[in-house]
Length: 277
Image 1: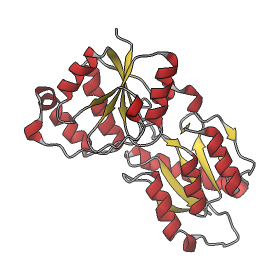
Image 2: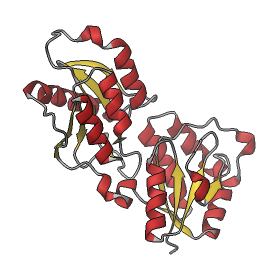
Image 3: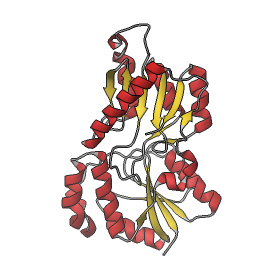
């Protein structure tokens, strides 16, 4: 089976990191660029421009390029599909895909992945390609969570598990036991911006815990797809939102630039904690 990798590239640094890993290891690859996706790093990488409505054409191109595997990396935007442009492959997949697109992200990505698998491409997880990105259990920063923070983290984990059971989001912000916001389709950055604008007045004790961002996979999620990730910008936004720390599930969240993320946490006085699930 061909060993080349198709990188379906979304927002953020993850697809670039995977492409650079392929370059370092000599693995053949192609970056798949979808409509509306601005990738300012692909100039020196082999790119295939694809349309949502014509997956059959994409699969032919990938086979010709020697790609036998695919990975989905970075945040993807749900497309506005134009049925008049569908190819035969898309017409066959459309009933399943259109139903899934109206569901949560995990359901939608499972449906998309199944189309690639039916075309003979095996799905590889980003964290399997870059295992060093998986968050290692423990506190990574100089600042340490206290008992109040640990209580907030437990409360946040329960909230994310409840949201994830209905395929809604992978993150929440909790302060002093109160949920200040949850992640939905808009993503983690928008959640933190919302808390920065609205969260100050909802902490009962001004001298109490400042709160934390918690991020974890959904229960039962296909971990080959959309495994949550954070990076230094996440930490900086958490600081701007007035939080005391960032907590991720150990082994279930990727830290895209560990050194810079820890440096950002230390500079802001935040704790960065990979919590055992």
